[in-house]
Image 1 (cartoon, rainbow, N blue to C red):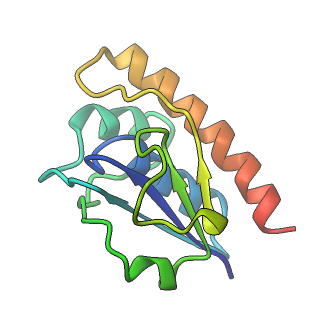
Image 2: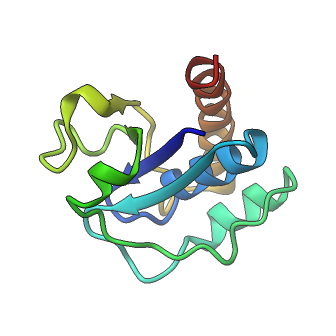
Length: 129
């Protein structure tokens, strides 16, 4: 079983969507998410666009990225917002360049959601072979 951690700054949109997709599409593995500066809730627009594809992330809570997480997770995936994250070991970190939809239209959230799904699907194939 692989354990994946998705990371972004506020842990309110992209990393939460990635976690939702990974855990739904790869139930034999496990994912969580965290942020460098976590906010107090998952963005309602992220919850809405994930519900549109049948995934409920409404109970997810943002949490802070810690050094201890490096020992718990096999792979750490940044959303492109944590360039050279000082908390993640280079050999375990994958950097995705995904635009932050926060504060933008639902159509932007949908586009980001679909991009994340594509990345997650490829990641599942790579890590579960």
